[in-house]
Amino acid sequence: MSTSPAILAVDWGTSSFRLWLMSNGGTVLAEQRSHEGMSEVAGRGFETVLESHLSALQVPDSLPVVICGMAGSRQGWVETGYIDTPADVTTIAENAVLVPGVARRIIIIPGLAVRSLSEPDVMRGEETQLLGAHLELPGGKRYCMPGTHSKWVSMNGAIVTGFETFMTGELFATISARTILVHSTSGAGGVDAQDPAFLTGVRDGWTRPEKTTHHLFSIRAGQLLHDRVTEQNRARLSGLLIGAELAGAGVRGGEQICLVASGSLHRLYHAALSECGVTVRDIDADVAVRRGLMESWHQYSNRSGDLKRA
Image (cartoon, rainbow, N blue to C red; front, side, top):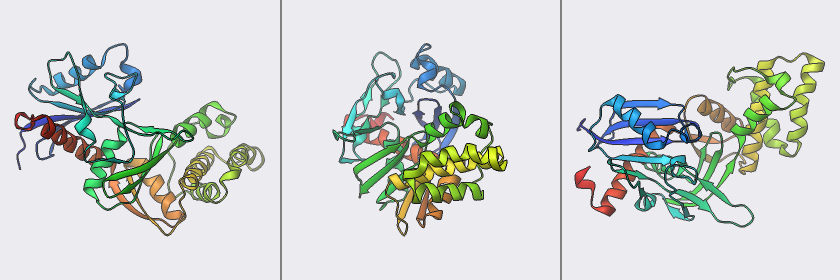
């Protein structure tokens, strides 16, 4: 397998930047990560930030760049629009947009949309991760993709038939830092996926989601009346929100779900899904997005006739 540099793959989100220098066979040759997400680079410019990372890697100008994520949003580098569902993940990148006015060949992948009047939804970046997950573990019917805004995706083969977004991560950050629960959950410590407070929270959020706002206040009351410690309270808060997400996503137990996640999110969601009786198929999120970015470049190149120049 060749290990010569062939492509630069970038996942550019709202709050993070990840870049991989890859061979044509998908081998990672170098990596750059930072917190220079879309919200941080508006003043400096996307091209400036990207080229600073490429200069650090000393890559030639001839290498193409494929980007997924918020760089293609309305507030991003170049707006790429959305592909309506149902959509075939293996053809999405055929509609990638070439960034104009730059010396290097750079494409940005479009997102996906559910254009329901009652429950509209969009995703950016996850469609590429989903493509990689589908290729890594084909045959999945439901995919859970945790994050600041968790995605739950239904698929029929390679066709995305629909998806829903849950603001679980953002709610956890906001509730723990900007509500009365700041007095009970403050701190930067992580949550142990095996903490009984987390697992009890998952069960309560999953089985009684209609009581979630009451359960949230009970965290404060539990500290005042029973001296429950911050770590226990943070674990319960996390469990309640994830459990309510699982209820909203229609998790009933006894089913199989593909979990596309890495690190602490993987540990928390794997434990939560298992607690609810789900058989979990694990797919590393970094592996999935790299596979999806590489495949997306091949899709686009085959369409435009540029694969021979990659």
